Image (cartoon, rainbow, N blue to C red; front, side, top):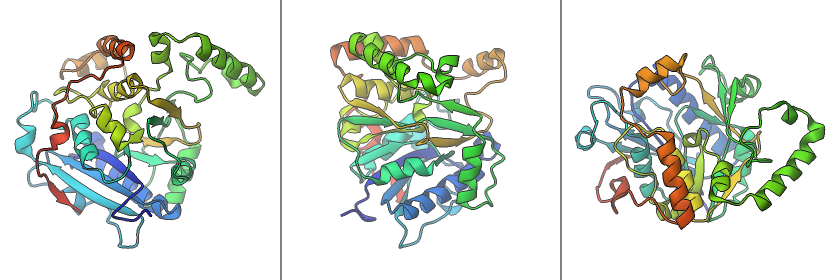
Amino acid sequence: MYNSQNPYLSIVVASRNDNHGGDMIKRMQIFVRALIHQCNKFELHCELLLVEWNPIQNEKLLHEILPSVNANDFLTIRYIIVPNELHQKLAFSQQIPLFQMIAKNVGIRRAKAKFVLCTNVDIIFSDELFIELSKKELQNNHFYRANRCDVPNTIDEKWSVEQQLEFCKNNITKRNGKNSLYANFYDTRGILFKYRILIPFLKLLSRIKSTYATSVTDRLVELDMDACGDFTLMSKQNWIDIQGYPELEIYSIHIDSMGVIAASALGFKQIIFNTTQCTYHMEHTGGWEFNTPIDKIHFYTKKPMLDWWTVREAGIYIMENKLKFNLNKETWGFSNLDLQEIS
């Protein structure tokens, strides 16, 4: 029997009160309010673990500015505080104010539920996705991905959640992630995929390709790593099996992909939810979207980070040999520390 002390799903996010992107508080408030609403609507007991990393001195903590839950809500919220003195011990702590994937590991290690979803604070889940989660049919040794659909930041925090969801459904500017019908195709944006009459043929072609194209590089192509930091779900035991995200003290780009690769290397089965079972991402500045390639160069030279080809090479290696990355200490996620928690 699931309840507030025994939730079905733990949802892990990381943030701090620094107004990242210019309207972070607005996006976080929309995220939390929608999550409370949908947990109640679909009667799904969840806990939100919001890891507050390196809080800014003299600024309010997140539990003071975000919506709170009531005793009869199906959602509980736990704020885990990672203080500045811990942050300062990490390399490049001056250039990188929030180590997102290490922060998510903090939440994974402290999650109560059998299943753990790592996502972000500028997301709204579609009702179709929440309906699927509320079936309680998640399985061990599987990892789950959902498309991320970008929507304009003109979404209004004063609207009802239903109005916000309707706005999102009708104002998708970009879709990120693979189509569950043909995950082994490099790209599904071509003209062939626009004709419904061709879908049976494309599905058959995808099935044939999965049967005969079985090399590690083929399997790597099938992995849905596009915007996977916004939705990667598996059992807590499976997160422990892969040792969480690699705790590299660098900018987080591609580290989320390493979590998906690690799950595949241990033989876990990928499940991609259908296109309606998606997440809506509220657009903002300060992310990985750039106006020009020159802007990208300027951004990349300011922070230490992994390049994709190194990640790809390491991924092929562990998938060929059925290994873990083995980059983390046993105490990953600061599991040996008693961090402050505000519930």
